[in-house]
Length: 431
Image (cartoon, rainbow, N blue to C red; front, side, top):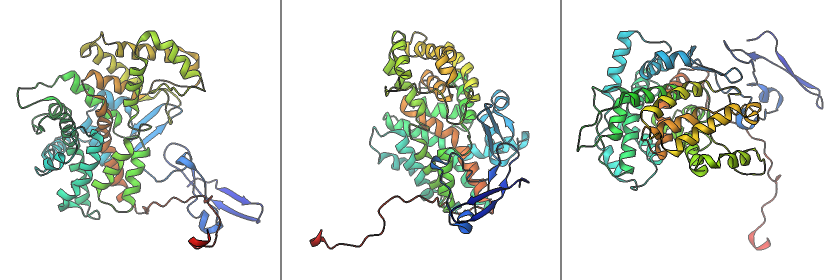
């Protein structure tokens, strides 16, 4: 608690309430309003929860003004350069970086859980052949509680851990199978000798007809993308997971709810929207026209992949991806592709145009990730799925943290009612 509480004064009714302050290790203080309604009958009003802290957490810290992102206190730049996604997953789940023995044991556990129950293949057959992979993901992940109900006691810490491992391990398998169903190819089984990221690429792109070799550049890029997407504090999908979990729903249902929230174009679908935008612009020769449209407040066109709701500085993840993007484009992409030339030209303009600089509309993580995914041969409708794979460990970590929180309560936001006042029912023959 901070030493300087706030006082709320209701001048009309002559009432006042002293409000405590909650402080974290970093970041702004929070006014404690938990007893406000009980003591005063007054609610707080905060659409979009822009000024509301819904929980205490020890997982991720963001300073949007300074462009800082830290997992468990470790700067994202250091983790991206030196760590692996499995090591970051362990850090998010357990709170500290693992030693070599702990990491090896964790990797073995995850490999052990990558297989899906064979009956789940029949579940995929129930989806239309061209169903969006995110629609399949929501359904399949939600159904896991029907296949893995042996460890669903959320009050048992061991059961929670087993479910966490299963969700994290099986998400790439589920995602790749969703893609294979979408393109009418056979579902590919995981291979235990491959790394987490290499295994995903194997399940995505191999077929029973011929051998498939994972490109190390692609594996490195996927590993980095998953690290950068692993968690991002109380975003819409993570908050959805926490809200669903507050009702004591099983973890598979909670993560399915998070996937549904992520699907929105304002959240996880942003990188898909970037590629749609580039396709609409079409050619470098059209850039000036579309830049003018973006600057025109009356025009509905918006440059996707620029700016961020939290970061008012350069998104630290975007700075990291920018270099990887160049490497991937140089070594894997068709450099004659007008789409990539167009993207690089847009980036150049955004970093040098006063209009974008003054409004702090820097390219964000979605701008670069979509370009990288396209260069790796991943289709647009899988972009949000890729986000979901990387973010699963963050969702699971927050769910685990919430379940261990003694102050956790079922979420129940209030509202400001603006409907009709009380009125009497009128029989239908008198209306």
